[in-house]
Length: 259
Image (cartoon, rainbow, N blue to C red; front, top):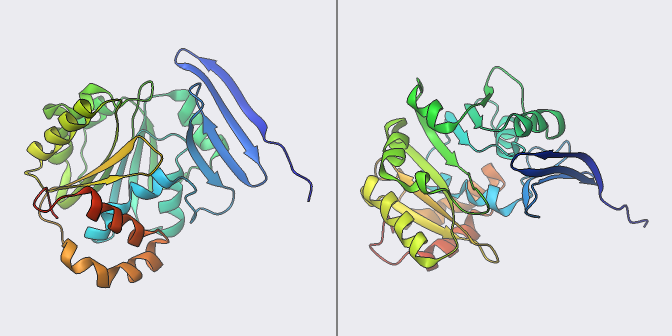
């Protein structure tokens, strides 16, 4: 079999650095100037999320019913939006991205779903939340600056704004990317304080990311009930919920949150 080398589809220098889109076979991915893959898709296969981080950020769905409305802050290539549109077409939502270049890339190269159910909004998430008219079952926050979660994301005011626009049984999924243990503890403590300790952590092997899930109220499905539901959920979502659950058992001591 002839090996096809990756080729560049898009390359642009911006004020925040260089942005590139690559493709090899049917795999397409987005990189910034830090060398990390920001978003990744398999062309014409929206039901596949190649990035383990994208999949992990949906692991909180083990504890909840399928969402009706979703907010994504930090779009990248929009792989998660594309997944929802392909697998759960009845779900609606907004994807908010501060960069006009990245927003255009999501539409031009990553099959971002342009439909009545999904809007791609180029705006600062802080401004969007100030004027938000919706309530969300799921909010996904995936924003990093120079490979670190910005301080304002773990400040009480922002987290309270997130909780204010959640539905009664809504949940927040936050990608916490830190460079030291103190920052992680501070971030986790802030989330737990705002969400009354209704939280659970999920670490990722070989990644610095830890996903924190925070629930507006006690989860609809409690951890003790999960094992019998996991096979059904894995079939529905196409995600490795069993593996995520086992990692959660390691990451979350008894009485540390919802566990």
